[in-house]
Length: 316
Length: 236
Image 1 (cartoon, helix red, strand yellow):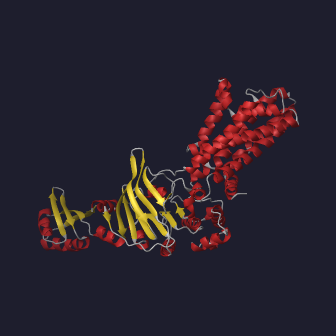
Image 2: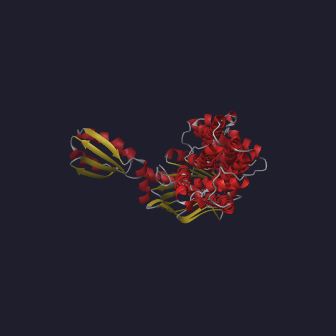
Image 3: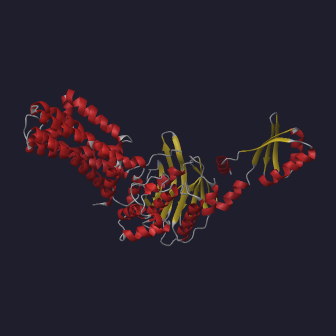
């Protein structure tokens, strides 16, 4: 596991979500394996491929699932079987279920009333303005697009101005403009001292929104800390290419001389080349082949799936 | 009216499956009117229509549709999470939902039963049936709301109880009647308006005590289960 220390800003009227040795299993299947993290003010991205256990972890954070082992606490109090935490915590789950027979205003207002806020009408209007849904607030949610429904849910989760906001795949189904707006909203909430955690399986989303990232792979916390450092680890990992050419042996000899190549394996099926620098290798390969008069028939980058990128981090 | 009750009522009355509630009570009244109109002796049509259809089918099935609709439907589609991510004590979620379920079921069943009882014998029998059915609706609703939290298939569980336990077993194995809401309702109705048309099998005391026990017990169970409500595991 890779840990990069991240200086936290001084906490003033802020909340901290702490996970200590949290595991969750279903029968024989381990969904989350011994995860510890402490989330403070600012935006944190929870990154990982599908099935990595992000949703399970979020559900435990939000008090909708009991950890099989370990503890999840918000400012010292457990989140499981403790509805009081919802005074400080908001959740936007991945399932886009909403009471489709209500209008967005009715829905957010009802949520404000359930929170027993002193002025539910004002809170509802403020939350709807935050997600820029005023224009459609009196239409039934059933008539909304996916992105609009998502914003209505975010408004409901923000209506009591929680210190902590958890969002499961919040950008799913949003068009680019809505995505940009949501990113801006999360940024400003984080800058205002809120603790924001959102999950995503898309690297670029996390890159644009958060400086701090927690990477999950196969139920484990694979890396945590500053995004740029982790990104560098990801780009600098060795890349593997499968190559077939008219003269594999000659090409192998020539490639070994290149500094961007860290290893070459020659087999009956062709060459397997390990490159330390993705860009340099792909630029140099055509030149080398041309100079030796070798024709490259096939060049396949192996191992480019997000899963393999993530699992590389586990080993790093 | 509490916000939970308001959302529940809107969700229940707004869903299409609410329309499923209407044919059964209508059938009950239609049969009673038909029998009365044709001059059939009440002793002949009373028991099958009032008990066989009214108390054994209409009441539990309506209570099942409504009882699993107030909470089970929200668990099914995930909207329950919106209500649960609030600091409301869980009893303030379960009890309003239960109240809506009881109110809707009782109103849907009591009116046609009153009409059928009136046609079969007297206003007193009609009233007795209506009151007993309303009490039955309390017990059934508590049972089916709790079932929504005990299983992902509350309707199936409820149908097994209504059809197998009450419908089949309690007619064959007499001992099971002590645990049959249907028999409590019959006993209570007969106590309120003694009549030849109702064939009681359990004592009024047993019926009253058990109805109260079931109502309170399952309501408490539902509250406790909702405190530990878990969302289903990751599907992707």
